[in-house]
Length: 128
Image 1: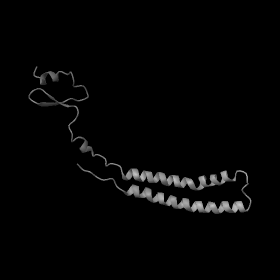
Image 2: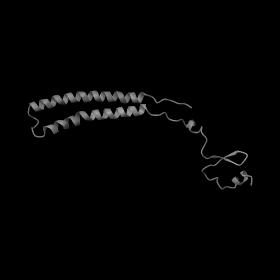
Image 3: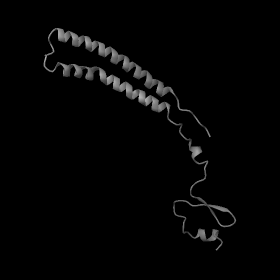
Image 4: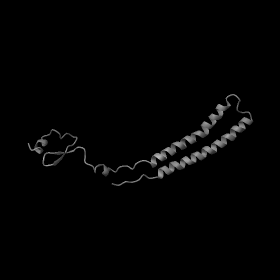
């Protein structure tokens, strides 16, 4: 058997992009905090419903990058912990489920799914 471990390169790429997104989210948060502070000082945000608008600014401009970073981190963890794929040759190392033993002399006959069951050849193999 050839057990290959999965390559960590895609996981590292996902982690790196996630770190960049978190850094951008922090920068965006500080930028919007300053912008909102200036808007409040200048009276550009009305008193009524100010909290909703402030939360909305942060959700639209900062929080989405944190969500994408979490998704990329989860994808990196899944890729890192996945099992190696089974080679095509490994699948056929075990006996086929359609191979059966017929008769007392232990002759092995392979039954195909095409329709060899019930054909005239089966009578010759059974000794009849």
